[in-house]
Image 1 (cartoon, rainbow, N blue to C red):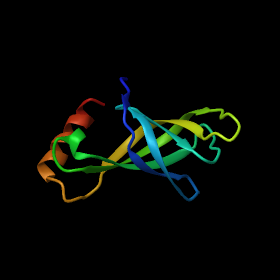
Image 2 (tube, helix red, strand yellow):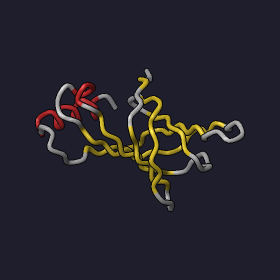
Image 3 (cartoon, helix red, strand yellow):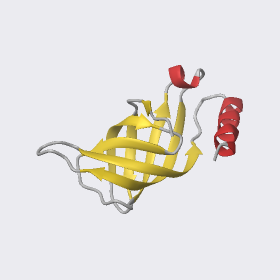
Image 4 (tube, helix red, strand yellow):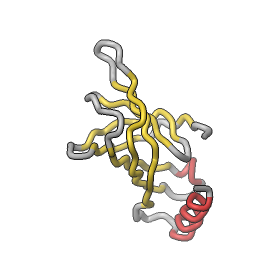
Amino acid sequence: MRRFDMRLPAIVKLEGAHEFHTETQNVSARGVFFYLDEPVNSGTKLEVTLTFPPHVTLTDAVRVRFLARVIRVEDPLPSARIGVAALIEDYQFLRSNGAPDFLAALQNGWKNTH
């Protein structure tokens, strides 16, 4: 899948752990890559919530929650953050003040490609 370099603020919630605030490095239709300050194991389930800004959606900002599974963990250099690649297994558009017609069209288009 084509990756899009997108630096978007994200909230990552690990299975059985607290939330981490981070930033995505890239996003594709099937995955997301970001950095964490704490180690995580491959196979870990997580939730990633992020907001696509108006310049990406061409309308109001759209919040999305991805349910994902860690598929790759990059070994960090000393004192560096840990790179995490996660496979998107499911997603949910979250309510916002955005146009519901846009959200429905986007959601139907995304599901039709999977």
